[in-house]
Image (tube, rainbow, N blue to C red):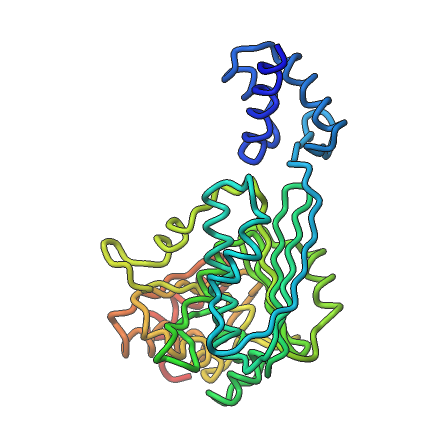
Length: 345
């Protein structure tokens, strides 16, 4: 009887990451036992601290009862191997994590740590891992020159310009070692991705948390670069799915990018000029498809629209430019310039 009880508990624990809200029904169906029996086991596991509970009734959600915080200070140089640090520090603390989530964690951690080793000019890095209520939070903070200073030296970009270029992808100050794809793909794999340096930073990911963004932004690092990678243990996302979204059919090349136009304008500024448009479209000829996301943009100027949807398209007919989340006023302006209405602006 005891062996059977332990088997049921183990099944519940192993399946909570994938079934945080319906674990009682899922376990009852799979194990062919009464749902009330499963609920009794859940209550017992909560009481023992092996799992934790959030919410009530239909909003009830179960998590693995892990409450872990680890921190390491590690000296680094050009001989440091990011995968060795992953294998000896992070991986042992991620026991029980689903394979798809573990692979995302490995990809993001090793990509970002490799950037530190190759680009930052840092001599040590601080690593932190937090696991709590079904959340995995990895933090990488180096004492180097800072990502935006690095890009200023390499390309003469302001922090605002660098943020936009990083979102496009294919930007690297060491083309012999890197493709410039690491930050782009990593930011799309995690629920929340945050990078900041010297008071500048941006957040991306599939589940942006405004409260988290505020919390992180209130404590900017004045030296080096900090990267925060967050993902829930029950995430169903896969590394392959993210790559497939931005690579061509039958071609594993990075051929598609997405540009949030809210990043292209300053505070209290509209997108009106040709220079703003050229900044948006800079380097996009490196891609086959460019998605322009107009979320948060209410209007655009004739010159801005004409530069992208007539001039750029005529100069680069091989690049497919798509419009996302545009309101009626913007759509009307784009249609007008495509017909030649903005040619003299």
